[in-house]
Length: 298
Image 1 (cartoon, rainbow, N blue to C red):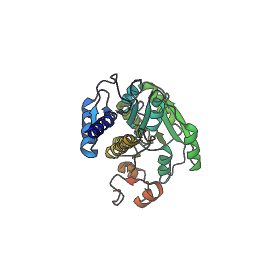
Image 2 (image 1 turned 45 degrees about the vertical axis):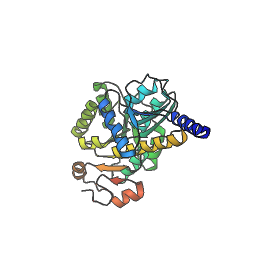
Image 3 (image 1 turned 180 degrees about the vertical axis):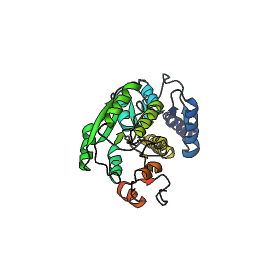
Image 4 (image 1 turned 120 degrees about the vertical axis):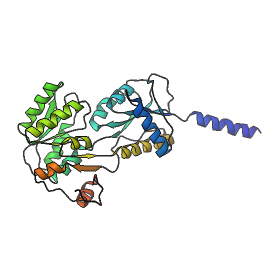
């Protein structure tokens, strides 16, 4: 009897140290509910919607912060021990993570700049410098990007974009004076809906091209982008959570497996660009077109 009681106490003690997983989306609680249901139905993970970031947390609790604004808010709370950011860019994550008190990791959106340059170089023959734009407040490793571009025989002009609609458009116009193609990192604060529309409209008027960082921008008029699907991101988050359950340590920040590439067919035809084959994209860069590697691009 004593042995049974001891076993029950042991089981209860073990259960008490299992942390809770939360999802937090600032101002978008409905989205948080949808994500929580997705984790429960697709990954058999118990996830609750977090409403009060100032409430007490246990050391083994994990908060999944959706988007840069949510991640910044969560990082400001000294009571939150473990954070996984999702739907954020690599550069903006590392900038915001400096204020996190506990463990912080992420599943990145977009794709590494070096890989994007390599894919671009496989079909873009223009030799003018590539204009590389980013928020002035966002620390970007310009020297790393420059070295990779030079390895590919490319020149890069970096343009830190000022805040404000008028100032940001002036910065972009200046970048276009010497360049036929513009690139950017995944930059949530710069590429709000208004700037995205203004930028693509301006580049279209000046007959310039934009190498985007998201599928949505290609649909809006950019040339091409490398991205990962929402399902791939959530799979990577599930891997993070399952690993944490076993080790109480978050995996390092990373991009999800299975990056995809999407091209704008209208611009490809307009500029007479010859795209790499599916087999080449997969073997050289490990990426598949949006339609899948076994299907033609168009």
